[in-house]
Amino acid sequence: MKKIIIAVLIFLTIAVLVSAKPITIKLGTPTPTGSEWDNALRKLAAEWKDITGGQVTVKVYSDGIAGKESDMIRKIRLRSLQSAVIAGEGLNEMAPDSLILNMPLLIQTDEEFEYVFQRIRPKLEKSIEEAGFKMIAWTMAGWMHFFSKKPVTLPEDLKKHKIAAADTDQALAPILKSMGFTTIPLTLNEIMASLTSGMVEACYTVPLGAASYQWFGIAKNMCALPISPVIGGVVVSMDAWDQIPDKFKPELLASAQKLSSDLAESGERLEREVMQVMQNYGLVINTVSQEAKAQWLELFSQGIKALPEKKYSLDLYREVVGYLESFRKLASQKK
Image (spheres, one colour):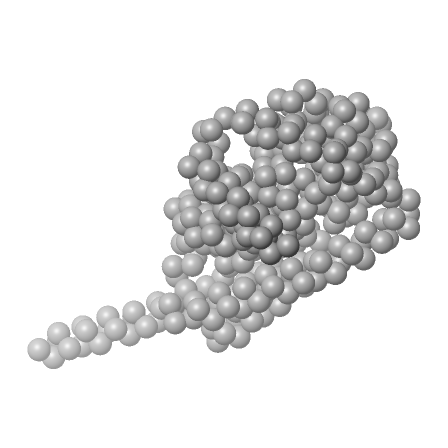
């Protein structure tokens, strides 16, 4: 009996020591050192260390040194990285149905996005978990716009341009190509040189992206029509997440949610400031009339129908359309 008791005590002691083993989470991000994103992630790291009494340490690898999104996801699966900031490419790999949110002019306002997103968020997070990841903080990077050397307000204006299509884009690029636009697949790092050389004359990104990459210096016209929301977030591998004691998880998620809220607030402010700076340096915002908007809507609705259904759930797409119809009906009744 004494031997059994001693064995049990030894087992319990080992179990306590194992559960208390420090956990290191290496987090990769493309954001520059010293940026608001970088500062927010380092603040999160400090909070997680404090919440867990030093049991969870987050090391932030900024400036894209962990690679692009596909590289980071591969490294997480190889367990050389445990967390990453991801957006279009990475998010679509984990949850293909997120492509629906990026379809051009399907969702048209911040209010519509929030209404739809909150209703399909559980399904997206379930898909992400099934892929082996935990989404700890969602982010909204802004709205996609066309930037071009010459003004673009109508679809026919854009057809006169060769368009840089980021190789990570799985929503807008195939639609533009199917509708007869001239698209040139490029990496993000190749777009500036291609704009400079004349290989392309237009690109599309969020305003913060145009400022960060300095594309607006050559593509000095921005079409005012917001094309689609750009979402992303911070994911942690389920392997790493499962190692964290359950007692800490609610507070860790609350800390991550605060990061998401803070970034959303600072992002809106930063975008306003960036837009003013770009206009000071010559950016021209080309307004789009209701008649022109109707042309874009018709064009993109046809393009969405041309997308292969295997890329996303048709049932979820119809669900999203239903949510949008309900929201717009309620909004019109309030007017």
